[in-house]
Image (cartoon, rainbow, N blue to C red; front, side):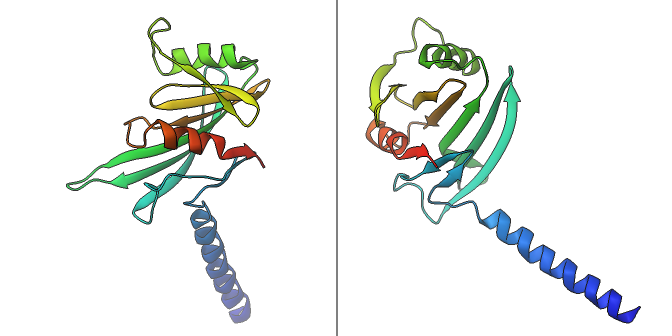
Length: 165
């Protein structure tokens, strides 16, 4: 019985190390998110930036989201960057993605100023704080700089640095 108990303790200890390593495996410099490799991140993502992944669903669309945030003096945190992979049948093309995101982000369809950009051969749209594209029917990727900390050049560089893994 003594040997079995020690074996269980050793196994539990090893499991703690594996789970801890898995949590730390979210690459603060990018990595993979739901089938997409994040190959470029702005310089604002550094050792003071914490990263976390979330999954959720809204209006029959599933989201896999990676969020980079920085602690604020006095408490709280500020989101520096978000990368979202959206999957759902209503995301048939770029127009459908724009329509969905207009509703999701509670934007006015008439005043949401977006410009086209080329994302490695795929047509995308971007505003001052977001860029998104539809790499295939049913899939969309969005890069968000919700607080305008990065600027358009870094936003688009990050978007262009994301590709299928």
